[in-house]
Image (cartoon, rainbow, N blue to C red):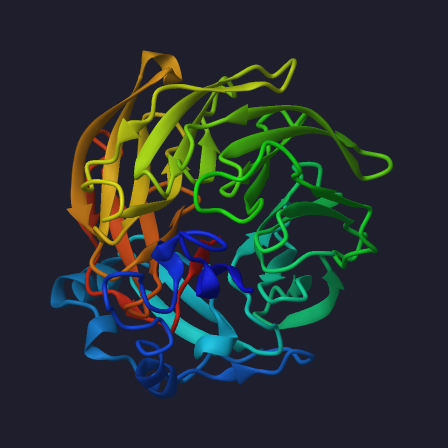
Length: 422
């Protein structure tokens, strides 16, 4: 069963991500997708062809700039950056959304759609910026490589099976030679070699999380994230089903993983995603089932992760809000956390050289069910993919205080579950 479509607290995961939330009688995710999916005007890019011309999509009122922004653009040229949006194609998403964003105003402009990649719900880019990778979050899971053309033309290089079901996260090793993916449905993690062209080779590893036993209401392991430690020496996998974070050592010649330790969270915490402090000595772990975030100590030598006491998110109690993804500023001063249900962003000050978090405030995200967050490369903009309101919100980030200020009306994008600004 698929990760974001079939999870239930009593079954394969959390009620936060079912078609109809248990006990709430709320609408299904399928029901909130259709209208915008039909109305969203883009230029479609076939999977095997390149797109060399910008899209001629009609902007909605929500996408038009204000008079002041127009005046600012007329005074000086403003740089733009590419933006990729992950979706669920089987629930109304058009494919991988292609867009650009104004690095000064945060304004997003649609430039097309890359079709032919099934359910690309999470995206990552190669360290050299030449290749985009997407999960195929389906029962028969896969990972797809896409060559990014300098002229805006993108070409699908191929898909490899992950060996598991419903992969929901992937990342590239800093050395650029290995791709990691996390299979939520089957509770395992996979490794694929990356060829010189950016294409993927045959899978070299598949490791299933067999212990500890699943947490309350879980029927097995559910790998939700896999990332490399900042120094590149270890690979960590976050598993919601077993309330654990596993640490592996990667054999960079064979592409295999050897488990060296695992850390457990309180039963029923439901760890989802973590982000490292720039020092590499601490990580911040979002627990979606008990609505908390935990500061974790990290030992680069052993790879051991030591979770601290879970902290409140400022988004209500457990069962009413479900944290999704934390991100951290490049200087390590602030952590932001997306809260589904509460539909807010929490802002934390990082204290004690990374060892502490202090909640500063929460602000409305401007959408429904923020599934994922991303900071622009220069750290001045924060993007939020709002799954149920079919939109991407953008915020200006104050570089001194970390305060967030809306950059305008959200950008309409059907089933937006991942956003990747480059």
